[in-house]
Each structure stands twice: as structure tokens, then as C-alpha cells.
Length: 235
View 1 (tube, rainbow, N blue to C red):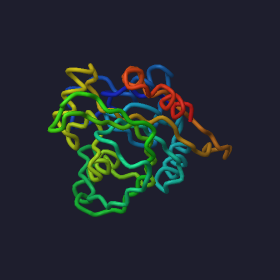
View 2: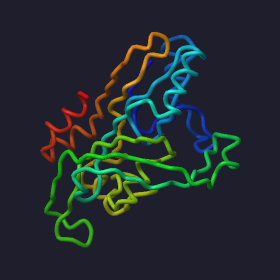
View 3: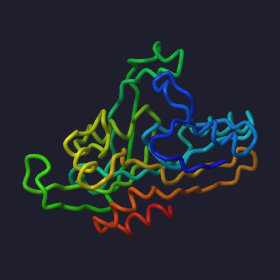
């Protein structure tokens, strides 16, 4: 089962957000009237395509595809500045503790290989002095994580000095507030838009896509990025 998870929705119950009462796992289970099994991670503030299995065997087989990096994943993001036209970020990341994983504290601190490919789709320059410059630049970027580290895309874009807009932990507050107060967008501008997997039973290759959401669409209209957004949304 593939869903388009809204930004701000947890996948499942977590000690980090004890006050939350709505979860994608529960909503999908109630909608289908049967148990479902998440097979990969999507952060709470990230929106977009997410996969669930309908039985333990399919969950195990799909999980192996994700664990061995055989799933081609595509994300789009709006980042600060004009990033290079394309490139690969090869920057190891220290493993972060996951409060939902009882064994996480034992693994935290290990340095892991982390690779992300990126391609700049469009740019805009606004005649607004948000930071210390008289104008402000942003890019629409297509991201392909080649490994699956925790918060990899957010940490990698910060590493190359083009943090994702709306990222409270790895971004820059003055730009996040500009998008919130002036442009009316108060979310992390990162969305999972496509994935290529093998069906766990038939072996058929599947290409799944999801639109990035109304917030991206409004900003694309404002910045003149409609064609670029449509092209990546269609896979």
C-alpha cells in the first residue's frame, strides 16, 4: 500500500511526541480494516510517498530492498541559495539516537557512509533583504539518497551550505521565518515524490509517484517553477 503522507503526521507512536494522537499507521489500518506494516522511515515534517506492507512476509522482503539500497528514491526540496547544478554529496554521518528504538543508544555515535546525488531544477532571486544581502536566492532541487541515514538529506544539504527551508534543526531561522511570515509556508520543504521498487512477491518493477503538496504548488506558481515541479512530480 502506498500513501502520500502529509507533513506533520507521525508514522507511528513515538516517545518524542507523546502528545500526538494521530498516526499514519493507525489511520491507514482503520481505513483498510486490517493490519499494515511500515517498511521504511519518513520523518514527521517530511511529506510524500510512503510504503506499507499488508503482511509480515511482504514487509520483510520490502524492508530488505530498502536496507540494501535497492530502492530508487526521489525527493524534492527548496533550499537556501543557488546550489550547484548537480553533484554528489559524499559526507559520512554520525548515527543519531532514535528514541523509538530501544537499542538505538548503543548504536548512536557510529560514523556511517552517506551518499546523496542532487540535481538543481530551478532558481529564483527575490528583491528582498532577508539576510545580509540585498537580494535573496533559493533553489528547487531533486535529491536521490543512495544510503538511508537518519535525517540524511537535511544534514547533507546543510553540509554544502544550502539548507532546506523550514528545517528547524539544520536550517537558518531567518529564512524559515521569511517563508512562514511573508510567503505563508510554515513547513519543512522536503517531499518524497517517487520510488522504484520490486514487488515483493511477483518481482515486477513498480514506479510509484506522489504530488509534493499544495505548499510546493503555491510556491512554484509564485517563483515560476510550475513546469519543473510538474516534471519531477510525474516521475
